[in-house]
Amino acid sequence: MTDLTSRALGAVIGSAVGDALGAPFEFGPEGAFSARFPHPGHGGEMCGGGGWEPGEATDDTQMAVLVAESLLEHGGLELPDVFHRFRRWAAADPKDIGLQTEAVLSGGDPWDLAAALHFQTSQRAAGNGALMRAAPSAVFFAPQGRESTMDAARRLSALTHGDRAAWEGTAILHELIRTALTGADPLAALPAALAAVHPDHRERYATVLAPDWHPDRATEFNGAVWPCLGSAVWALRTTSSYEEAVRAAIDLGGDTDTVAAVTGGLAGAVHGVEAVPAPWTEALHVPLPGFGERVLRAPELAGLARQLLG
Ligand SMILES: [Mg+2]
Picture 1 (cartoon, protein in one colour):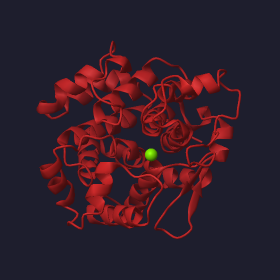
Picture 2: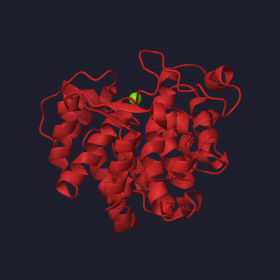
Picture 3: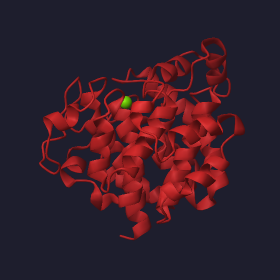
């Protein structure tokens, strides 16, 4: 396997594993993961709970798979198709779905207006729900360079999130994964990524992505896009392995599946798929409500990642 393949598989599988690992700890307190599993590498961490089977991925990965399959079937970005896949999935009553995502997908409005209309009335659409599904599109658009990758990220975000803050955060994450796929350090790419962010949103992202920022300094719950991205970058910056990074992410508490999915996608792209503990990938499975009885496991996710690389 080439380094690029390993990093692409690391992004896609690493994100899914983080999602499944974090799901049982959602809305729990800080430190709950390491209180239960004090020693890294011990095993048994894919424990299930809170309605989740051991290794069962949640909406984060389900939506990421829908994006991946649309990109592959159309050979590019076909936004109405992605939206209709999301809507079909949402109508099949998935176990978990974000509040903003559900409101947008179940409202019956057309694909190009639904998120904007929801934002107009709610004024709340800066959740982390577009960030969590970024890995496949980051892999797919990476060869096209920074501008195209960030542009695609914004368009995919806008399907469910009307607030430009969510678009910009998702664009930054795509750029960080794209950088990692090249073998370069995504932390070193932060200044260039921030320079490409819409000026209205740059300062707020510069704050949560600064080297001295800590998740304790978050001014919102980590279900919001800024602290979620900031926490993932913090987890990457302060650890030296995939396992340590996702442990740190889950130990933050709160929206643990998504913070760990974002962290896992980034850390997987940096450290490669070999760094994802095998017992975790072996337990991983991704049901796909609305699409028959399909359940994807790690080999199918690896197949998607390879195809996304082209
Ligand atoms: Mg979830």
